[in-house]
Amino acid sequence: MRNRAGRGMGPGMEKTTCAIAGGGPAGLMLGLLLARAGVEVVVLEKHGDFLRDFRGDTVHPSTLEILDELGLGRRFAELPQHKAERMTAVTDDEELLVADLTRLRGRHRAIAFVPQWDFLDLLADEARRYPNFTLRMNCEVLEFTGSGLRYKDKGQVTAAKRGSPDLSSGGPGGRPPDEEGAEHVLEAVLSVAADGRRSVLRRGLPLREFGAPMDVGWFRMPREPSDRVDPFLRVGGGGRLMVAIDRETYWQMGYVVPKDSPAGDRAAVGAAVAELVPWLADRVGEMGEISTLRVQVNRLRRWYRPGLLCVGDAAHAMSPVLGVGINLAVQDAVAAANLLWEPLVKGRVSTADLAAVQRRRMPATVAIQSLQLLVQRRLIAPALAGRFSTAPLKALSRLGPLTRPMVTLLAHGVRPEHVRVPERP
Image (cartoon, rainbow, N blue to C red; front, side, top):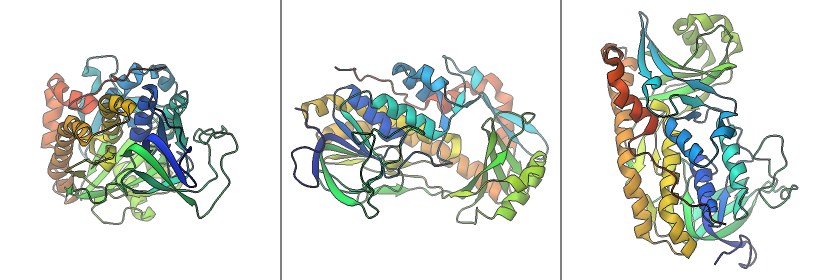
């Protein structure tokens, strides 16, 4: 039996079938798929919009295939984006091709770099087609109560889709502004933590930390039409690493520094740009603000407790190495929807059901994190210590077509998921 959110529970109390904390890729994909199956879903997002820079923007072929399965492939293709078919490493002496996605089989043979806010708008717009889906912005989840989510509702909602009125709370007017925020409890058959690596909901669950040798300072640089295309890793002497991603109208740059070192010093970063990428030297004065990513690699030993499931970064914080974070989160969401939609329709989800989701997704998580840790240990840590060797990259470059298994792993992951959720009236 379907309970409409906000009804029948008294002041400050609401009820739904699935309450999701976090309106990121995992939360919105899961909400969309469950709503498609006829499950009532409420997604609580703590921000007023999706417009935050330097979130993961790499959409891999595994996610592109899922969008195709949902009938969203054409709409996604219309979003502003850059498709990268090749990835290179540039040293002081040479340029090495380390990944060629044109060797992939299938329709999608490139990685799409798309602003995450556009991707999230697409998912939210599609989910809103279903009357049993609700997205509430400016709602910060505070804790899992054991039977639902306690959250703070700050009221006035900024539209999830830029330039359009907000419809997420039942009308174009939004809710009255409330700086302090009124607290509410949303009762649910299942609560899902999709609120990222700083999730308040995963507290108390056993966590395994792996660490990382680096942090990253992200910033923008102007791009000229005559510039090179495709992303590259710049490796310089003295322990300097810089990533550059072609975003059509600008370069998204990442300056890699030793763990807990200052990553936001504009003078130091500007000098590094001028030295490592000299054709950008005359644009250093136009460099954007620097946003520091404190890199974490960890995963929960158990992703669930009765009534609660963690997915995406809330279950396993990923390194930015290989740019797979969005795609692992989306894969988690698809697997969870495939396994849980029927129990949720029946109004009862057991810990065995939740354990099945972890069992399904843990091997892929372990494999990808192991690969990230290998890259961190063998390439990044030595480079930051001034001991970088080009031998591994040269070996990859020489393998040519034999690198297809590695490129397939990058593009599709270990256990690619496919949509098995029916669209129910």
